[in-house]
Amino acid sequence: MADGTVQPACRQPVYKRVLLKISGEALMGDQGFGLHPTTVNRIAEEIKSVYDLGVQVCLVIGGGNIFRGLQGAARGMERTTADYMGMLATVMNALAMQSALEARGVFTRVISAIPMDQVCEPYIRRRAVRHLEKGRICIFAAGTGNPYFTTDTAATLRANEMSCEAVFKGTQVAGVYDKDPEKYGDATRYDDITYDEVLRRNLKVMDASAVALARDNNKPIFVFSLEEPGGFAGILRGKGICTKVHGGMPRP
Image (tube, rainbow, N blue to C red):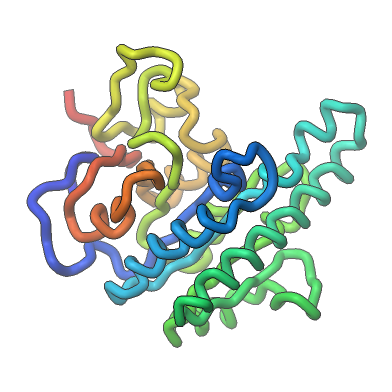
């Protein structure tokens, strides 16, 4: 897997334990707000296809389809309160994804950084690791439990704590581009790129603290399209289109 276009295909998954980061907006389909059940079920099928390969899967889902802390703060709300509201939105999304996965026979645990025992488990690292070892998917909700940190940073943090081998960022485009591909027809996709280049060029992969945390722990980030059927499982089996963010030298 030297670059983002992974060839040749292999039968066994490249990684045994991974974390998938999904934005909250990915769950709203074309509604513009909230949860779109068909979209949630489609993404659940993608996750199950990776689970069926024997890969241990962690999930972090944003809350931007319901409430985004930065937007609330921009409208005059106190930032800490707005961020806590955003964390609660991620719990709602996590419960929706848990329901979709368990409807497909996949045992799932929602684990929240903010204790709310009646609906999900509190975050205890050793317990979460044990869930993975028992073949359960872990959905980490409520971010880091602290304001001023995004779910991107929470995803990289949990990936490190769970000893995941890689972070997968599911988006609406097939990787990282030099400019917005939805606005510019001549946008160029990178097969692979270094953490430092992402930070230097301020490319919108994940926020800067998340990328720096991945860099400091040598955790590769794969950016791919959730709109591509079989894309998540395909990359893990050695095929598919994505951008790999890593610490080595990018291809010229």
